[in-house]
Each structure stands twice: as C-alpha cells, then as structure tokens.
Length: 639
Image 1 (tube, rainbow, N blue to C red):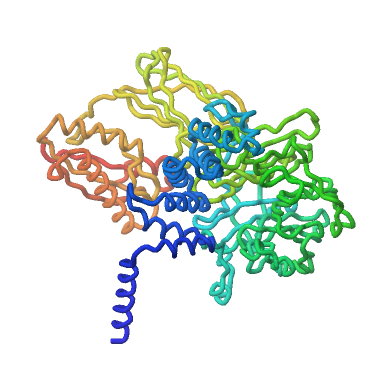
Image 2 (cartoon, rainbow, N blue to C red):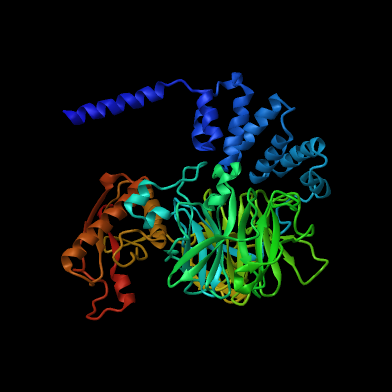
C-alpha cells in the first residue's frame, strides 16, 4: 500500500510540474547561474509565436550558443536582430560565427559586414575586412590527410585534448570520470554548470601500432584528478613533472576573485610531481595571474619552452599563443612572451603544437576558416611564412582542434565535434592508388558499356562509384594499402563481385569478364540456377544469392501457375541436429525473399535437409567443397 501511495505522489508531482506556468524569473535565475540547459528549457516554455518578447529570443540565442547548438543559436540571433537591429554588436558577431559553423558562409559574410560597420576598431573586424573573401569554397583547399575514428571514444562522454607523453603514450581529457569512481564520489560528483556533464579528468592510453585502434585507457592516479575541471596536460622531458590546465578555483588564493568564484571556464596552469606511480604536490605555475585564463600547455621538442594559450595582459584577442622559458629542470620559468601578430589575431588562437621539424600547428576561429575552430600550420623556419588552413576533411564547419603529430612515424591525432560530440580522430597522410579497368562480355569478348562499378571497403562504406564508358573502361582512386570489394552490375548480365587490395600508390589494372543472364533451365523437374551460397554458419542471403533469386522471381512471374519446393542444404561441419535446424532456417529465409518480391506464399514450400544430401561427397571436405554443399535447390511441384 505504501508503494502505491509513493507512486501516486510522484505521478501527481510530475503532473503538477507539467502544468506549472513558465517563469521568466526562474529562467533568468538559471541563466545567471550559467545553468544553460535548464535556462534554455525554461525560456523555450515562454515562446508565444509571433508575440514572443524579443528578450526571450535573445536569451535563447545566448543559451543555444553556450551549449554549442549552432543551428538553433543562428535562428534565434536572426530573430532577435530582425526585431531590434540596435542590439549589441556582439549579437552580429555571434550570428556570423554560428552561421559559419553551419556552413552558411555567404550569410556569415553579410553578418560580419554589419558587425564591422558597428565595431570598426575591433581587431576581429579589422582582420575580417582584410580577408572578407577568404571563406572556403568546395575544392579550394583539398585535404592532404586521411581521418578515421581513433577507437577510444565513448558514445556518450566527450574525449579530446591530447598530448604525447612518450613515443607510444598519449594523455587525453575525458568526462567519463564515473567509470572508475566509487559510489561516494559518484554521489557527490561535481558537474560542469552549463551542460551538467561530469567534470573532466586526465587519462592515458598506449598505442600498439600506427594503424591499430586505441581502446584501453587508465585514469592518471594521485591528486591530479580531483573534483575540478581538468584540461590538457603535457609531460616535462624528465617524465618527473606534468603541466596541466585545471580550474583556477583549484588554487585557494585565487578563489577571492569574483570571476574565479563562478567556476565556469576560468582555467589556470598547474604542475604536479611524480612520486612512484602517483602525481602529487599540485602547485600553480609561478607566472599565472589571477583572473585570467591559461590553457593547453605544450613543451617544445627541445624542452626549453612551455607554450600555452592565454588572455593575460598583452594579448591581442580572446586567446593568444604565448611561450615561457623553462628553467631549473622544469620548476622555474622566465618571462612569458606573446608569439606576435604573425600568429595571433583578434580572434581565439589555441592548442599550440610544434613538431621536431619546426612546424607550428595551432587552432583558431579566425575569419576565413570552415566554421568554428580550425587547425592551421606555420613553418617556423621560414620568417616570411603565414599560417595556412589545413583544408577540407581535417577542418569542417564544426570545431576541429588540438592537432598532435609524430613526424617520424608520420601520423597523429586531432579532436573534433563534427558528429555532435567531442571525439578523438587518427590522422594519416592521404595516399591514393589509381584503379583502372575494362569490362568484357564473356561470349563475344567485346567491351561492355554502362556497367555500374561500385567500390566498398570492409565496413561496407562506399569508396566510389563509376560507370564504364563507351570503351567499356572505368577508373577511380582508392586509399593506399586498403582492402576493398568491387561490385559490377548491369541489367541482362550476371552480377559480379571481386576483392582486391590497393598498394602503396601503385596503379592497378583490372580486367573483368561478365556473363549474360539466361532464363533458368528446367532439368529433372528442378529450376536450375547457379548456386545460392551461404556463408559458414549463417542464414543471411549473400549478394550473389540475391541476384540468382531475382532470376527465379522473374521466371515465376512469367509462369504464374508454377509452385516450387525450396530444399536447403548445409555442409557436413557440425552436428546433424544443428545442421538440420540451420538448413530449415535457410529454406525459410529463401522463401521469404521470394515473398518479399511479390511471389505469393501459397506458391512456395520450404524444407531443410541438413547435411544428409551433399552435392560433393567427401570425407575431408575442402572449403570449396563445403561452399558447394551449402546451397538451396528448387523442385517444381506444379508447372
């Protein structure tokens, strides 16, 4: 009875909450606390169509912007500015920024011009006016690298901000902290205010090879991971010290600052010392100033400088790239210096990384990128060089950042939210092998035109699709060292598949022979088709099998009174009882395929006979023998 009362009470409470009138005061309170998810939901309840107060549109634009929901943010910024063009110039900039994140570059240009007119002394406006036509166009800057998912990402939590710890070890940031927590810490987990996701922590993972996905990881142990938002970390060359970003609130003396008290986005740089397997003695770096942001440290290959991003005094934009000399084995530092206007703009410059051959990679949201954060490269050896956008594929309309690359092993990683969450991707140089071929008729030896040629990889992703030309020829390019399948299809010909593997940039020449389809024959009261093969221990009809069954469908549509019995067979591997069930399943799957393509079920019967009637009688069957024995036959019950 008590349980029933509790359930009724909960139902009534939920119903009462649903009927509660929306409250502007409550929405503003959430917004002031930077609880943007709750604020967004409450402001949304205040929408009243055309009669919505413009203030609500403004607040919804800001909430969606803070949560990274660029499509909705652009919509509400547009509504707010249409109703009140005199709003803060920041609204025009944020509108342009979110439009570019949606790939709407020409609309973003218009918004940026309005921003520049109203804020002509803003460094971002000055940069835009010099580079207004630099927005990307399709094919203007093709990628030189291949991007693939790294394997370590979680489907729910965010993973990003890597750095090399050793040659084969990576440090990264994730908010999957609950995985390794005791129940007490789970109960009192500190969460990020805006999204209510768990706080981020530092993890490490070991690479097994250049191409193998990264799966295993572990939480850094010791005092380094506590109830604070932690950011990117980097090891000192001695491997005894680690520099990392964390909430400024972590430093007690900084908590007196009103901005630090908010615990929202204010980060500082700390270091920790290794004691055994744990990190202890957490301390703020001596050059860090209270009330300013310091993030994403990186130690130069020579170990003489610590690079970082900050908005400390002397910065040009929202964040600038800085460096500071490392002294006394990493525990003392010189004076920080700004990297200058060749790199820093009025926008945000972040995530510095320098390779051993002196290429500086960094992230920026400057105008002229693909939207949001983009990755740029600068050759430090060339005093006249300017930063270059790394182009399509690497950069997208979303945020792409944190490029780390191993020049000797010729691969690296980057972080991106291109699919709606922050993930880590592996980066490898783009290498392509040209594949050419010709399709020939098996009987006439003449070339076949108009053949659809489709290239797919092992994960069934389409790599390319072409058609044979007037000479029966086709050509495309495939990534190097990649296993792939080519599918050939043309009406009136048997479907064909061939498996290949591309080399290291070497051209491949293929000659494909196709046979014309003929109507199925009737022999010994059976409809004679090519084998309907099944893979080992599977009941799924293969693509080759589908093409043969399509011939049977056409034949039965021509002979509308024909009734058939499908008899399915297995190979001799395994127990007979299991094979019997497997063959019955294959028979019913085959029958269902015919029904799905319009053949009435009352014209079809099906049975399985297991391995009792092999086509190839053998004591020690070869794989080819087993494949022939896994088949279906079609007996005519009525012509």
